[in-house]
Amino acid sequence: MRRLIILAALLCLAAQTHAQQSEYGDMTNAHVKAIQMTALAMLAGRHGNCPSFHVIESALSEEWHDANISMDTPKFKNAMNLSSLGPLEQMRKDPVEFCRGAWELLGPSGLYRRQLLEAN
Image (cartoon, rainbow, N blue to C red; front, side, top):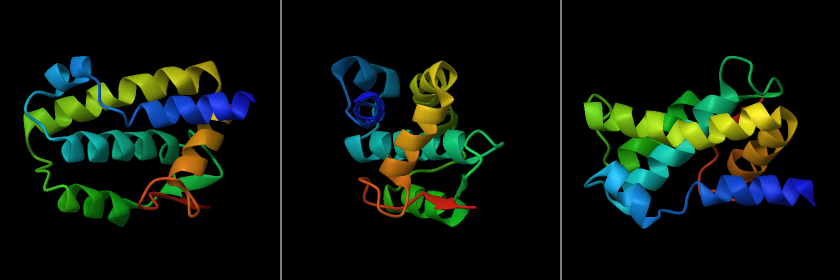
C-alpha cells in the first residue's frame, strides 16, 4: 500500500495545477511535464541517490529536444529547480520508496512514455 502511495505522489508531480502554471510562467504542459520527469530522473539517477540504477543522459537530451526546450535559459534552470523540490522532499522522507517509485515510473517498464533510468 505504501508503495502505491509513493508512486501516486510521484505521478502527481506530472500533473500541472493552476498554481504551478503561474510558477512555470508561459511554459506549455509538454515543457512542464518533460522538465518534471527529467528533474525526477536526475535526482534519482545521479550522485548515488538510488544506487541500483542511473539516469540515461541521452534520454534526458531526447526528452528536452522532443519538448522543444532550450536548456541554456534561466527559465529552464529555474523550472528544473522548482521541479526538484517535491521529489527531493519525498527522497528525504523515505529514500527506499522514492527510488522504487522513480524506477516504476521511469525505468524500462515504467509508466512514463520514455525510459529515463537504467539498472547499474
